[in-house]
Length: 206
Image 1: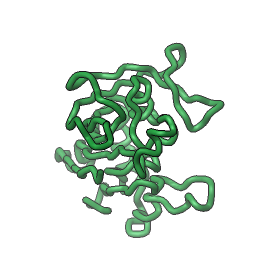
Image 2: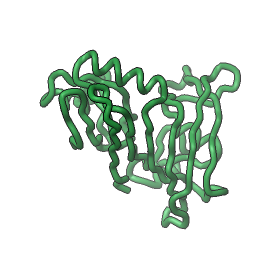
Image 3: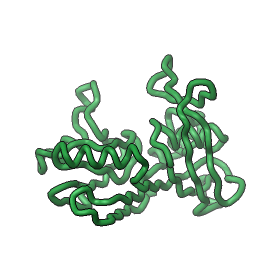
């Protein structure tokens, strides 16, 4: 689960189904942050993955490192890569999805495309594999913004929801996989302590 740790930060590989941070119900109290903090009590949250998403999560050690890494995320200085399997055959080999997103307040935690009030949201995609047994397409995804559920909403909005997505896919496609087929595969950033360029990778488990 732990890929790297030093005096400034920790990189963990989160399994699907485990929250990054604790939720309100008692059954969601167990989370990646608490597990990391059991070993490094000064670990602080920098960013989150959806509970259903697996892959790389970065934690800071102490408030100063948290501030530096949070600024890097806010200023889009952190490279993020994901892998997913979506329904259907994507047309083309690569492209961008540029659709503004906002909270769907009556249906929280869902998000939605909202041309009037949504925040700018941009996702790059590239085909990795076609002709899967599921009938879907394996994609590499790069979110250039960090909106809640961005990848899930963007792909659903163009007619290619992620397989196993119980929030945004039709029931048949939501049931087509035992989990959400979305994995955070890559994190690239500058070490906030010594300025080294760091890159971490995790292979998709599906």
